[in-house]
Length: 226
Length: 302
Image 1: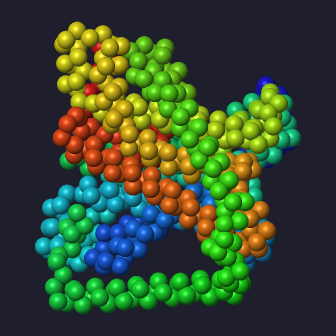
Image 2 (image 1 turned 30 degrees about the vertical axis):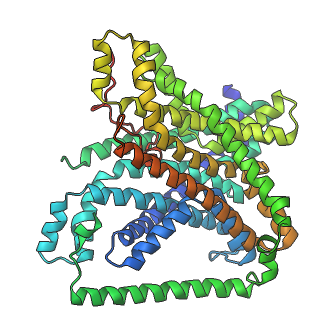
Image 3 (image 1 turned 90 degrees about the vertical axis):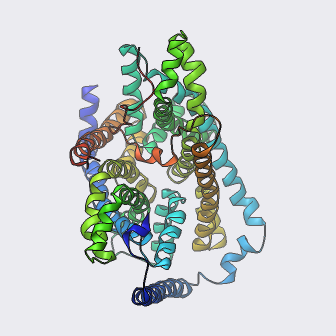
């Protein structure tokens, strides 16, 4: 079995594929954190149209399968609308399109987590901030959100782990990450099925479990005791 | 809750809010116009593109309805098979015996940490090698196998959370009247846990419906999104096809999500029976390695 694993690593660029997975996760995580926080701010803002937009976005995008979004970025945006994401190479374009899809989808879950975090912040905090004369943006940015983030590290870690696993769906539009490599390997070396499954599955366990354990520990560490 | 963040608007603030409203609407309208103009530029707004779906039933009969049926078939089979498996592993994880608890825990954590696509791919090739199923059945089996393995372990955690959510007094009372462990689980905890879990199970069904699309797009299982390519290359209407397919998913999942939150609200506020509940969004927040707090739970090991 050791020989089989060595053979797979020699024949296929397994580490390279997982590196693409990590990159997809990294950029999508940053993008969805920003976009999700903006959506959350819209959903609690004093302007009704923004609240309405935030709610509509969440209800529409969250109920669409990520696969449909990712396939739509390639079939719809790239093939039909000729959106190239600033690159004339198929690989780069599709890598960026996948990130776009992942950000649009994952932001919904970030938004919902941040919003539930805002609800955990003590009412007195916001009231005191308003009494000092801070406006909405200041109340949210200086007082409420910093405390909200501390209490949602756990849920956000879960979103991050789900995102890591969701990057595999980029295989549907030909981004050469771990799942697509597995598909290729499994079709060429069908007799090594279980070894291939073991290697790829172990890779994902290695990516997700420590994230969960570490961020779970951090979330307990920074949680506001109430 | 959101009103805590800002005062009731006075005359000045109301004026400012109106200004923001106008600005936001203008930006949205500009974006929409830009998107529509780009679509029009590529001829995607012509009635010819939308006609197959809005003006007739042929496209629905040939592509969409069969696709939707396959989606529902795979999702339905998956939840029916995954529920008993989830119940088994969920209860096993609460066992008093470490040699039951530990293997169950490892299996559940493993299958929650692995992407469902990986499971489907492996199942598909395993069926190719060890069975002689015909391709369409094989793909259905592969998709269902992947979904069952993943969702079975998520449901195991839901079952565990459901049992742990029952107030402590219930198991103490059962112990006080002399029930054995099995009786306590069967007669007291499980019936209440099943009710508490209902919203989370319905929410998980949404996840399953969405995940069937993975099997369609990567494996080629003939469900809804797999029909996007054949339908759009027959009618030459990519955008219209994608919009209609997305709309079907959105309506279906929106109904399920609304039902889950109605169930949750009903369970929390009902007058008879317990009010413990495992909420729908709980499913999304639980990742491998991050665990339900056991401190306040009603379930205690003997």
